[in-house]
Image (cartoon, rainbow, N blue to C red):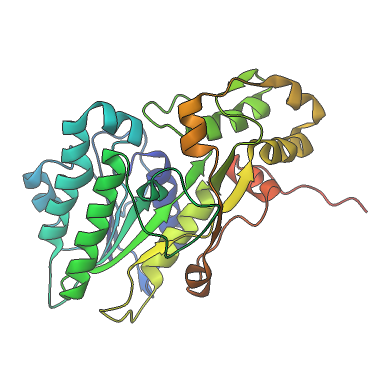
Length: 321
């Protein structure tokens, strides 16, 4: 089994690579080679199965070299975040859409179609959402990043219809806890508030305590990505895009969970200065029902306390006898 991860040096890519290596199998077969693609690598797993390919995913010749010996499973994670993609349209277009389409084109194989798991985003829904939503909600992108995500979903599903790739797309919510200083990521505040409480540092939150967003820890996201790759015998005409189950939590609820973990004093570290634009985008996300994705085996973190524990890689809380 040969597995490729694009964006492998990113926050989620590094965790996914470690989990693939630790598990050692995928789709019932041993992982013999793990191919990692990113512009650079800050650290690499010390494992003979790993082959790192530094370079830009926009380099079609590099993609051909990476794929020369074939791959059975691809996790396509690389992206320019929403804020950065909006500021630099050309960069977002080439990385988030054109390079992804080139990757899919090079992967086309009607004899042995590879499994392709694409990390899409809840950004495809846009803003001004209804008070209740479900996984059949109509996408209405209101940013270039979101539009390119939706285009990639469509291309993936079309090639699955043709039997040339075995595609699956997951719409990811805000994933925490990303490293501090995640430039270009509009949802960085969701991670920053967790880091601040864990480190005992002051933090000014750019949304109100009542702001409600969709949350998921990185370990939960990795588990869902791996689960997507494991799904088998999907009919060609089945819906290939899943809205993952999410925790809808207000900042106040997250702060309650942090106080339960780090003590009531951490509440004093957090002050609020809402940014109207961020509040409109990420402060009024409604409840989301996802019966189809739950039936397929996808999951959320379960609770705010569990989210905080997994996001910050904390030990399980001791039970009081």
